[in-house]
Every structure is written in structure tokens, then in C-alpha cells.
Image 1 (cartoon, rainbow over the protein chains, first blue to last red):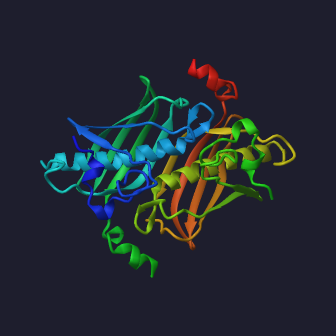
Image 2 (cartoon, one colour):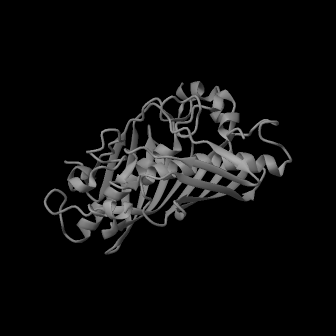
Length: 161
Length: 161
């Protein structure tokens, strides 16, 4: 299945965390499977907090982008729309909470699973679990809101005036 | 004044966010000034959420590392110890919460101010405000705990066994 981030319109595909058009970014890719969004990410050696452990800021970044994709897919599902068929709505982060349950080992692939805890018209609350080699290492709770018009394609120019 | 991160022992100076020994990292630098930790950071063009706005995962990363430095300095201050004179304790993140108050414009320098809301023997709660061109764009609340021995210099080898 095509990753949700690859369905974002070009104008919204430059995110450092998940934008396919950001040459320097992390390229988080989330797939929607029966009400759960799944992403896999292999940190690079420099993504460390300390030797042997994954940097918490990277974990927060992955949870952030994965949550926005989860929110988009859950919002579509609630409306009976389908990713890849109907337009994919773009959400932005209102708040991000991460509990680091234990140090995350650096080396294996990180597995993220995201589910919507609440789906409103404008706001979706997402819960994410980050698992490494079968052990849950971090948990996120993210409030996603529909992107305001002030962040749209022409907003950057307006904001910089 | 010497940044707090430059006082971390070499074994704990590889963090992607703030380690002086991480060649690819963000190199967050926090200075302690009369009970407030201050950091300034200029995002690069690729650090975008959308064209014109800073990526939330970067903001979370900056708040994370700046909070650990704030926790170290506040913990020392509570004990009557001085950065650069006495050993700097290393904290790690137990939980990270960020409220994105408004889109953060990409271009100007970001200013972070961190203060301890609670200072315990093992745990410090830090509040951070992120301001751009005089406007507060994000606020963080971070629980920092003294680094457990399981994350010490020899733990990586032990954890990978």
C-alpha cells in the first residue's frame, strides 16, 4: 500500500520529518492497515542520545509525523473516504506528548503503531506506541488539528512580509 | 559563559541534539544566566514543516536538549554547585510535552528560555518557552531524571549483548 505521506499534495510534502520533497529529511512513511497506521524507521548511527541509545528528539519527530498521517487516515475513515482514492487532508500538530518508558536501543528497526483515540471534525487525538525488538520503549499522545488556511501554500510569503 | 553542554563529560557528549562530539548533530548550546537557561538556534532551510514554517520535530528536539541542560544547571544551583567548577550532572528525558501555540516562522533565530519548575534529588521538571521575533510560538514541559547507571559509558556494550 502507498504510504500516506506520498498522498499529501505537493504543496504540503516538504516536511523535514516526512516530506517526500525534502531532500535532507527523515522520510517517515506510514501505512494504514485496518484502523492502525504502521511505520518502520531505521535510525542512523548519529541519531544517538548516548552511544547505544536512540536520541529522544528523533523519537519525538517520528511520533509527530506518524501521528499526522494517522490523523489523516482516521479522519478519512470516519467520513467513509479512502486513502489514495479521495483527497488526503493535511493535519498539523497542536500538542505532542512523549513518555520515554525505557532507553531505546540504537541498531534495530523502530516500529511505530498509531491509532486515533478521538476523531472530531477539526481535531484528532492520536496514540502511538514505539516498539523495538518486541519491547515498547516510548509512547506518544498527539493532538492533531486540520491545517489552518494561514499555513497554506501562499501563507509563507504572507507571513514573511 | 561556557555552554552547559560543553561541560558534559566526553562519554555523554555524543547526543544528536546537543553533543559537541556528534559531527552530524544540531549542537544546541544552553547558557545559564541567573536561574534561567538560554539557547539560540538558527534552523536551516530544510528544517521546515511546510515552506515558511519550522518543523515541530526540530522544536521538540531543541526543547528536549535545552531542558536537560536546564535541569543540570538548576540541580547544581539547588546544591550550591557551580557550572564549570563542579561536575555537571547528566539528565535524561522521562517525558516531553510541547504545545505548539502558533506556526513558528522559518528564517529568524529561535530563542529558548528554560526554567526549573520543580527540583528534586533525582527529578527536575523544566518549563521552556520558545520565542521568535518577540512572539512566543511554543511552550514545553519536560520531566528530566538523573541518568540511570544502565545508560552509562559501558551500558551500550551490555545492552547490545
